[in-house]
View 1 (tube, rainbow, N blue to C red):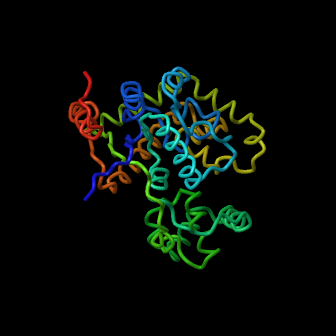
View 2: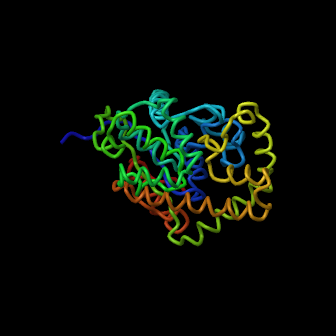
View 3: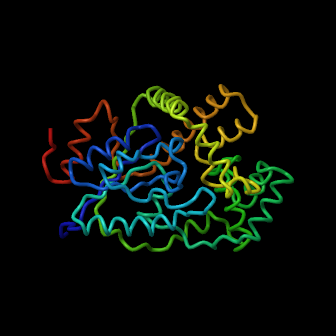
Amino acid sequence: MPADSRPIAIALMGPTASGKTALALEWAERFGGEIVSVDSALVYRRLDIGAAKPTADERARVPHHLIDLREPWQPYSAAEFAVDARRALDDIVARGRLPILAGGTGLYLHALLQGLSPMPEADPAVRAQIEAEAGQCGWAAMHAQLARIDPEAAARIHATDAQRIQRALEVHRLSGRSISDWRRDRAQVPRLPLRVLKLVLAPDDRALLHARIERRFDQMLADGFLDEVRALRAQPGLRDHPRPLELPALRAVGYRQAWEHLDGASTAAQMRDLGVYATRQLAKRQLTWLRGELDAQWFDPQLQRPRLEQARAMFMDIPARR
């Protein structure tokens, strides 16, 4: 079999607060790289502190791509990400640089590397109908409806995940087929013109990850996260939206909890605890998804740094720098 001569790229994956951003920056500076964000929150402008967006200094040190593409009230899909990411990767390689994919949105990476099923496009009328039904009976009842028509999807989608429940019901109503059936009919995707090294950063001790999540959320609050959310609430595109908390941007962990707190639904201490809990749950979902990436190599970024560097060096076929 001939050697794979495609250019290389590195994908740094892992749960939130696992150290992906710091390592991506370090490797990009050491090896002439550029970072392609694989994060569904970073595509939105004005989501800075709560999304842990790279700072102006970090973006000046290393070029970043796929950040600040949309306003929080504008749609952006995984399919759009796949197109935009491929274009960014092509440009980085053309400049002779190393692409480093960094982020924790599994659906985005999946869309880029494996493609998405050619299921029906969104239909505003059907979505409005589903939202109206949910307004009357609640999303838990809509999830139960999904369980009757597509048990597989219902088992995969949490009963509070309004966006994914709505999409699964929409696909069924438009096509008469379940979203699970559509997923099995995945279309062939043109091969990515890169060899990708998949590295998962995940502390072996989950208590350490939870502690990092807690510290980061507290730092976000100290950095003015609530003021950021107040500014978001004043934006006409969000202020005038009939259901702003159903927008994908505001489903990013922390933002919903802060928004509801500013509505008077919780105390500051309760909001903080709810935000930390939601972030831990996100990390749990990310780890579950990552276990399905059978060709990924897992490392504790603190305890196994030499092995991590060795895996990178072997893939790049250059010695690790001290």
